Length: 310
Image (cartoon, rainbow, N blue to C red):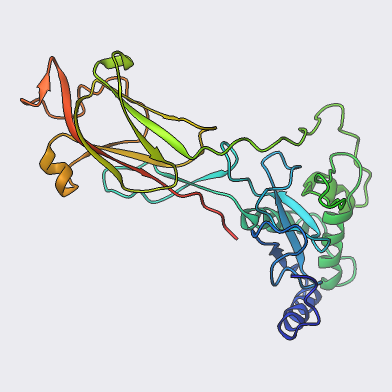
């Protein structure tokens, strides 16, 4: 959406944002995750909003999904939807016997949260010069017009450059102090190209420990859940690997079923999330072992979806 101040609802939001700023509250709003580079989402399109777009983790390269237009006032790190490109946050596990589960996310919402924290940090540096309205305006100017030192602009989009969140530079700007030039001691990383996003993986079952012998491999798609296959095979070790790109930061759970009845009913399986070099102790020793190595009747793979938060 282009500037929405003339729209009835957009005008209402813009008036609310103006009144918030008069009371010292800076409205920080996500630009959106539609990927369009000529418009941003509502209500970031209101001119009184501090609209925030997202960069990759390098803090310089605009994220592929981030909406953008000349209305954007600031970039901040939001991550991106490829390997090693997203935030990882603790999350609730899907079963009661697992306690270390993580979910990945990327979006202009995390970027906006960083800017909101930055606003709070800057507010602690300096009292408003005359009024609470001055406080919001001064902080916005410090965030969007700081130059020199560690300040940086994101890579241009449509020949338009916008500043990135740099609290050190903004702090100096707010205090009206010249920032020392820090280029030689801590250069910023160069913008990086997008890695290839992996979509497929293999979970391979080796008949011996330490990944020895000819494996039986099952293909699965990242981002899909409950991909199950029934087959009897000997499992001395297990290895999970991507097959067509860089491995994404996704939560992948592999459930092994010792008996066919467990596979059919979908219960009492043993779940793993990483490679297992020695699977000999995964199940109770019984007749469904051979030479100290267990057999399984089937497997289910669950791989969480990519999370893009707006």
